[in-house]
Image (cartoon, rainbow, N blue to C red; front, top):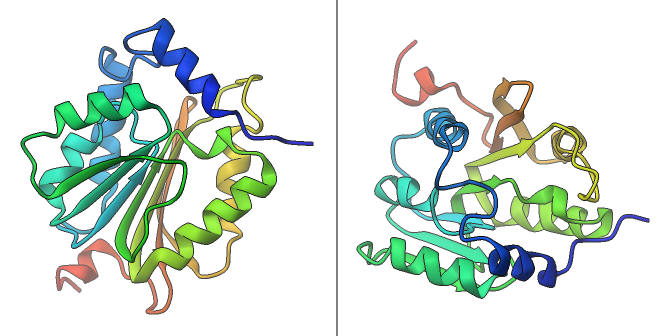
Length: 201
């Protein structure tokens, strides 16, 4: 039976290393964040959520494109680092919680998070994300897809399950040997291409 990794797992990682996943020190991560930003179908968002924000390396790049950004993480260390990095953005909040943020969003970014959840928690998480998305809102999911035996599930399965969720339409996808990125729109209304969103035929 799949079980979620406990909060202590992440506390131990942050206690052992200043940058546990190389989020702040590797070209791979810099480039992946650029791909995530390029995949966003709208230039600006009203209210965005980033669960599992870690130290805020992606959050600080999302912030200029959002009127409000709500970031969460389960690690006190990660939250402290994210708050420090985002201190100059009055419209960004960072909360230490495992719960998905309350309210409605027109953007949710789930980066390297869902494979830490067991099946029941994963299903509940994605259902909460879909319910929180406004009609036409954007969901971006990006996950490592190489073998990671310590995770409850691999990245491809995370994305395959997400693609089968009702209420979402796939509008963009990106595949590499290392990671998979999918962009969904909450339906209705029907998903529109980026060109259609800006009035091009």
